[in-house]
Length: 280
Image (tube, rainbow, N blue to C red):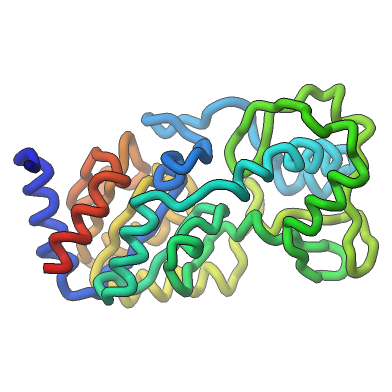
C-alpha cells in the first residue's frame, strides 16, 4: 500500500503528464542503482578529486596517458552495467506515448539498452571513441582490446571505481602505459566521445535539446543536481515559459527555486509506479 505523500505525488504526476507531451531529463542519480558512481553528494557538492579538464587532456601526452590508464581499468564496470527499473520505466513511458523526448546527461547508454529511442545524449557516450586527428569514431570495446594487448602489466590491477568510467589508480602504474592509437590514421590523440569538464556540448546536440524543451508541455527531471549549465538552461526555458517543472531527486538541485514540485524519493521505486498509474 502506498503512503499518502507517494500517492499524492503520483496523482500530481499523472495529472500533469497525461497528455504525453512531457520531456524527461536524467542525470547520474538514475544510474547509481546500476553501480555507476555519481559526481556529487546530496548537497550538490562534487565528491573526490577534480576530474580531468578538456584543456588538460588536449595539452599534454602525459595527461592523455594518465586518463587512458585509469579508463582502461574503469571501462569493464561501465560496459557490464545493466539498466535498472527506472531506465526500464522511462522506456515504457516513451513507447506508450506518455513522454516524448528523453534527454540524458549520462554517458553510459543505459537508456538505449533499456529500449528508449532517439535519446538526446547531452554529454556523449563512453561506448564510442573519437580520434581528434582524423575525426573518425571507433567502438570503445575495440580500443579497449588494443589497450589490454599493449598494457598486459595492468591485468589484474585493482582500482577504485570513479564516475564516468574513471578509476583511482596509483600514479606508479601510469608512467609506462601505452596510449591507444587510432585504427584509422594511427594518431595518438584519441578521446572518449564525451563532453569533458571545460568542453562545450556539441552545437547540434544542444540545439536538439533546446528544441525539445521549447516544444514540451513540461519537463520531469530525474536524478540530477542540475549543476551543469547544459541541463540547467533547459529548466530555465521550461520555467520562463510557465510550463510545469518537476524533479525526482534525492538532494539539492540548482533549480530548486524554479521547481513546481520536487519529489525526494528513489527514482528506481517511483518511476515504475508512475508507469502503472499512467497506463490506466
